[in-house]
Structures are given as C-alpha cells and as structure tokens.
Length: 260
Image (cartoon, rainbow, N blue to C red; front, side):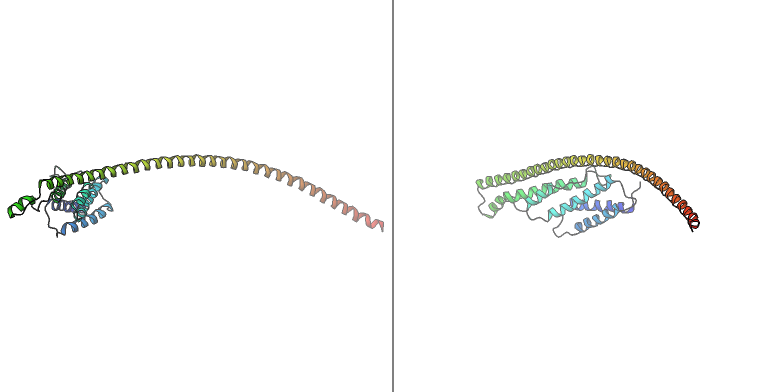
C-alpha cells in the first residue's frame, strides 16, 4: 500500500530531526524541540487515519520520536553523569528511516551522545578544559603550578568509582525489574488459579440450577395434574348436589298442594 501524504511528511521531518540531532547544536537552538513536537502531533494523526500503515511501522516511528524526545530531555540535565545515565535508558530505532541509511540514524546519534557525555564526565573528573586539553598543560604555560600526580590518580579513582556506581545502579535496576517480573508472574498465576476455581464453581452452580429448574418443572406439571383432578371431582360432586336439590324442590312443590 502506497504511503499517504501525512506519512511522507512525517518521514521527511523525522529525517530532518535525525540530521539536526547528529549535528553539533548551540545551547539556544530551539527548532529541534519544535520539530519533535510537530512529529508527535503528526504521529497521533497518522494513528487515527483510516489508511494508516502497519502496526510495526507505527511502532518504529513512535520509538524514534520517543528517542528524540528523551534525548532533548537528557540534554536539559545539569550534570554530565545524569545525562550519561539518562542516555543509557534511551532506545534508538531499529530500522533505517530511508533506504540510503545502512545504520539507523537514531542509533548513530545515540552512540555519539553516549561518547560525548562520557567525555564530559571524564573531563569533569580529570579536570580538563572545554577543548579537551588538560588543565595541567594550561597551568604550565601560564606559569601556575598544576596538580600533583597523586591528584591525577585520585581523579582517576573517582572516575572509576562513579562508573562503578553507575554499573551498580544499573544492576540494581535490572534486579528490581526482574523481581517485579517475577512478582507479576506469581500474581498472574494466582489470579489465573482463582479465576479457574471461580469458573468451576460457577459451572457447578449453573448445572445445579438447571437440575433444580427441571425438577421444579416436573413438580409443577404434577401439581397441575393433581389440581385438575381435584377440580373434576369437586365439579361432579357439586353437580350431584345441585341435581339432588333440584329434584327435592320439585318433589316438595308437588307434594305441598296435595297436603292442603
């Protein structure tokens, strides 16, 4: 099925956003954030379209838009360690946006941002300037005494400590997610068992209700037959009594004049 005009515009804007994300931007750059907001609106409109693409394609678009949105949010963080940690939880796209791409552009942007944040974090801990030049060389040029070798070892140890802390945090998050998955599985099995028992109880109750209904129907028929028989005997008895009274009255009327 041919792509709609809305989908073509979304792909074009997505390629533009991926290109801007891969480039070095000024801190005051605002266009990318506006473009990502427009991508979200176009994606929502595409989901509600009658001739929308396959669900796998829509999921891939959503994955890339969420990645760009998360990347912008990570860039707004103040600490480089927080940026690096937030960048690790981002999920880039799995399929190239255009046929010209061999590797998804979002994956390339993800690797670039990870390297940039790691470099910034290393610079903060080891004490390098914005150009990546160690402050020790700068101080030597300006005649200012630089840090001692022990300070460099301490900075390297602090970097290892931060990286180890991040790794421990990831392991802890993975363990918590695994525990949540196990708990969810246990609760699901327990709920399934309870629902199965309830279904069995409900089936037994329905079966008993059907049996009681059949018995009630049978007893109602017997009662109706018995009632009809009783009515028949009562009707015959009343007829006999009425006939007897009628004959008695006729005899009484005939006998009374003769007595006078």
